[in-house]
Image (cartoon, rainbow, N blue to C red; front, side, top):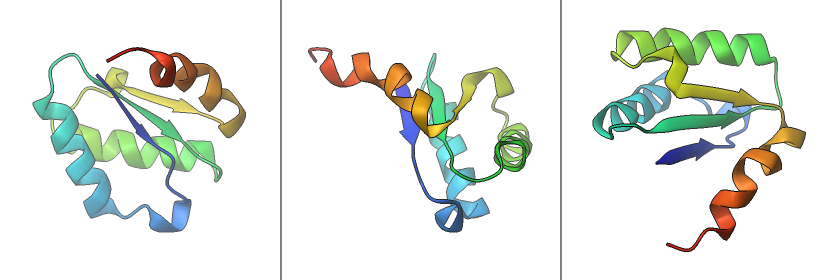
Amino acid sequence: MVFYSAQKGYKRHPETVRRQMQILQSVPNSCFLIKGLSDQAVIRDAFIEIASQEGVSGDRLRFCRPQLAKRYTGPIWRSPM
């Protein structure tokens, strides 16, 4: 299962990220694809810190610039479910 977030930076709140990590933790073999427009290092550090606090391994998080998001998510949207 791939979870995807394309929230704007001003909508990212630590409590929202914490809840996203709790959901990720409860779904085995899942990962979280995070698209961001703002400073990638800041986004990455914030998500990894909260993931660690929630017991989620950082290797389950994927970060991409907006132009790369389509490459990662394209097959997901086209796959039959």
